[in-house]
Image 1 (cartoon, rainbow, N blue to C red):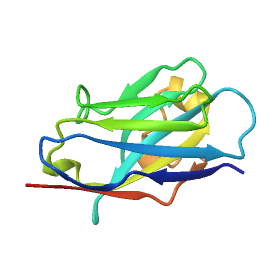
Image 2: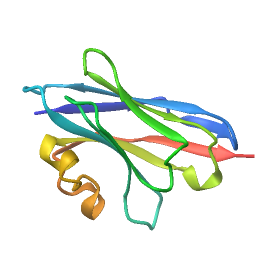
Image 3: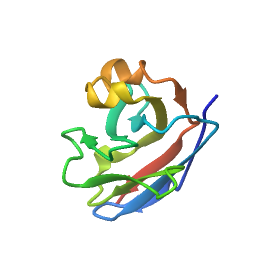
Image 4: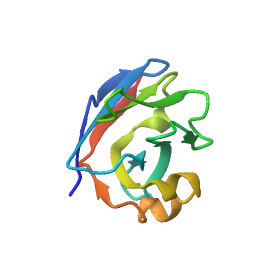
Length: 130
């Protein structure tokens, strides 16, 4: 079973930058999809970005395109979310998720709040303030 741990959450000023890290363990195989989601109370979980961990293809929600960058480390055991030009709308609990590679390249990774993905971390809070 895949274990995921998010880190790096905190408070950041509007217009600033911040980076989240997701550390993964317990997986086998070389191709899979990893993604970042976020959720605020009372709203559905939203897919933010995903990365196909073999080919490196990336996918972004329109709300973060051009501001956020998803990446992986050389060992493919860590995934990052670099967030730039943050605004109040980015305040949320951020989660990382893991699933089959098909979910990435078929474009299903964010469907139904990520319900098609198999493993989830506990989340890390990001709060954007003035």
